Amino acid sequence: MTIIALYNNYPLASFNHIEKSGSYTLPETAQLKNGKPFFIPDYAVPCLIEVHFAVRISRLGRNIGRRFANRYYDAATVVPHFFSPSMLELAQKNGLPWSSAMGFDSSVPIGDFLSLSSDEVQHQAFSLSVDGKPVMKGNTANMLQSVDEIIADVSRFHTLRRGDLLLTGAPVVPLPITMNSRVEAFLNEEKVLSFNVK
Image (tube, rainbow, N blue to C red):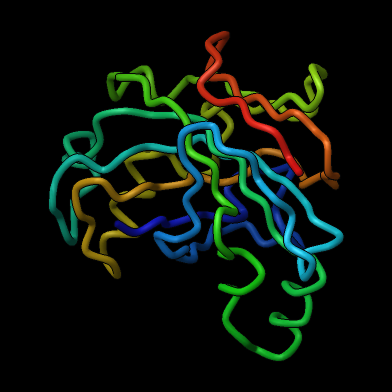
């Protein structure tokens, strides 16, 4: 199972005014399931959180044409993503992989998946709340690349397999997160994930 994450896929969250989105992979060990608490590692302080709309890949594919891409996912969810900004800056400055900064253990909590049609996927509101207060909101209608375009582009380089997870980009800039916080993620009005940060 591979997690593929996009960056620069929303106008408000693009880095350095780069217009084209890019992607990076995260290891399977980055998953955090079943609403278990997220423990901020000592090496990731300060820690930032961002939020992604995500789709689950449902079949094997490579070099997928855009018009066929909607056949390759079957469900969606909202995924918070924790990372270390200081480690990311160091990696970027030295031309090193981002994996230690972005893909450390349990940095990608995953909640419930909802079945959505390909038409519905294109217009989904999603949000993240911390301690009961909404702190991040997005809508897939604002993505620079649609889900189908992302799948067509990413599958040129990565064979997609059933169960892979595609994080389609953060709609707003990340925010600091601290211990003893309660995080909740919503797809439209439906809560798909809740957990504690320790």
